[in-house]
Image 1 (tube, rainbow, N blue to C red):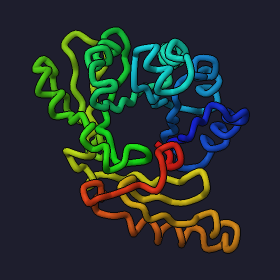
Image 2 (spheres, helix red, strand yellow; image 1 turned 60 degrees about the horizontal axis):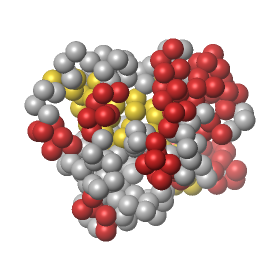
Image 3 (cartoon, rainbow, N blue to C red; image 1 turned 60 degrees about the vertical axis):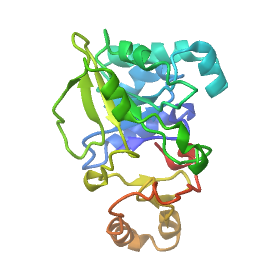
Image 4 (cartoon, rainbow, N blue to C red; image 1 turned 180 degrees about the vertical axis):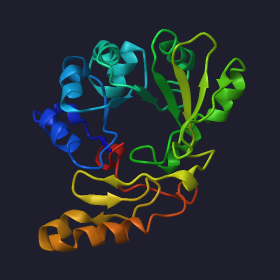
Length: 258
């Protein structure tokens, strides 16, 4: 299970939430996706509460560009958060980076270097037509195949779990790994087992599908039917996404959950 947002670390009760979720029978892996700005001061308590690992969304290593993208001057806080997560053993630590032509595609090697002395995974995720980056911005995609072809020194690693979307590589002599998640150029839907629950109580079966199912309504009106409802919804998970069929998401990623 992964707790996402929005930004989960702005909740004052986040440690209580983690602790309660960690105690649910059957939860064997509990992770969180965060922007990392508040991670340094919270990493130790999160670990003690039962969190196993973190994903950190980070699209630039340039302080001025970070300010422009996020609206806050906090890159140093994110980097401190990464190192503190390493210190308290919240691992594997995964850095999620979306490259966009003309915005941050000149930072590929800088992100590679993050893995030189840190046992982390930097994962490049192809831009998807979600939120403000809709169909009209698809010319800004940086395809992962182009990165792999440009850096012949990358060594391909064997995937430990075929249900995971990333394909991993390593720079020789570096401690960490480089991952490539390619929803636009390499449709990995056949192995996808992800189900998302949005902040307003809707089940979303696929990022590339606008269908949603109102779990909150069932919970409030007919809680006795909740298990049946969840099983029925999950059985409808599509075989593949619709990104290539004039898809236009009705939600942004911070409303869906990353």
